[in-house]
Image (tube, rainbow, N blue to C red; front, side):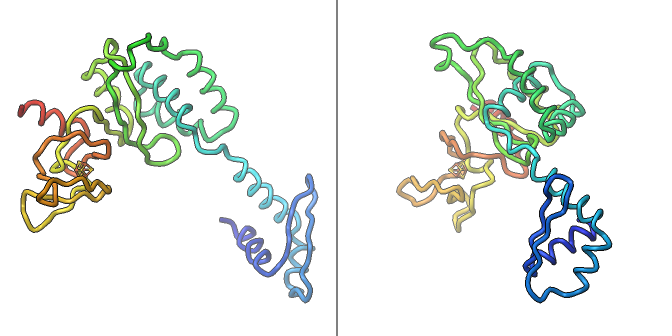
Amino acid sequence: MSATTDIIQAMRNSGFVLELAGDRLKVRVPPGCPSFYKYLLRNRKSEFIAALKEQQAEFAQPTELSDTERGLLIAMGLHWQYSADDWAQLWSDCRDHEQRANWLRIAESEQPPAPKQGDTELAVTIRIEGNFGTGRMQFDMGVPLDRWNEQKFSEQIAAMPGATWWQLDQPKRCADCRHAQPTQHTALVTCGAGREDYPACGAFWDSDPKPCNQWAPSANTHGQTADNELRNAR
Ligand code: SF4
């Protein structure tokens, strides 16, 4: 924040209204305002105008990507096997209205063919967690079974900085989950994500595999790794 922005904020807090009308500065002065502010307004008008223009540009930043838009961009990046630099460039471009619209147009035209009827029941359901342009978040997607290649997918996600993934439709253990809360019994945990369908003992056995839509890898498990271990153990 610049010194002028700080002054503008202080003036607004004191009851000033400072706005731009095109390139002109419009000011409503509160009664009894300090003469110091009047002096600033007279002598630093161009700095006030520049700072207000900057604020306008910030407010005009694109809104958060919708899930559909984010999905289109992720599908495109995975399809073209983006490198870490490509992902960083894509999310950075998405902060600009025009570039973002261009990317979305490209992603739309490169969409993989729509799943055939009946394919949806045969899709692998994936959750990806990472930084997708506007902060850390989770994103779910379905991949038709005939296009699913776990090793390739894993390699592609590895190029997304800080991202991890797991299959939602595979059983999960509380022992690998960041939401598990310890209890006095070493093998029993409660759920910090709000699940309360505990068995009669009042908590979950931490190594019991179960379907769980809220599972998320703990700090010492890494997305799909936990499932691989589970599958190998069976
Ligand atoms: S979110 Fe699911 S896997 Fe994680 S602790 Fe709760 S019940 Fe267990």
